[in-house]
Length: 72
Image 1 (tube, rainbow, N blue to C red):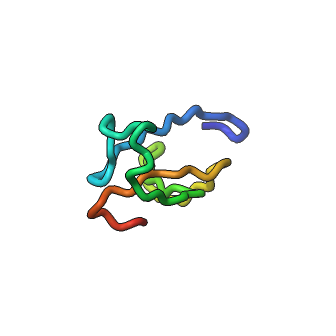
Image 2: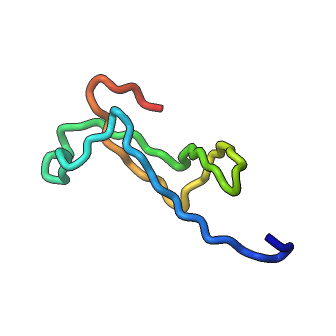
């Protein structure tokens, strides 16, 4: 790439072992505890260079806590 060029990157997530998936719904949300998250850690590889970074989100995301999974 030349200086000043831009490159479009796509971020793809993978659910971990503690993800609820389609079993979670707002109708049963009161049955769970929640954790607020204002950033996420991502690992990425661009042009053969691999790195990891903490990304600050523009909002605070509340995610349900699965019974035996500790909060991050």
